[in-house]
Length: 76
Image: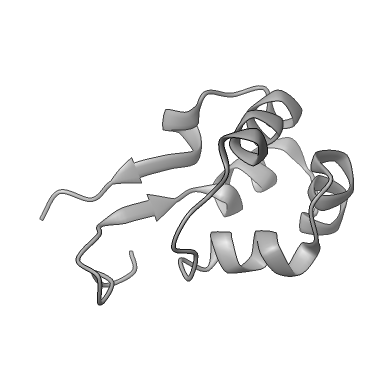
C-alpha cells in the first residue's frame, strides 16, 4: 500500500483490482467514464488530491460497484 501522503490522508484507491476483476483496461475505463487516461492514472497511482462526485458516480456505474469498493482508508 502507498505511504501516507504529505497532506496526511490515508485513502487507498483500488482501481487496479477492480480493473483486473473485470478484465478491463485503464484506457477502456477512461473512454467509458469520459475522463482522460492521465487523470485515471493519477487516481490509481495514489497521486490524486481530489475526485469529483460526477467522476466517482461514473466510475461506480461503469464498474458496477460502490464508492467503498473504489476507495478505502488505510488503518495503520
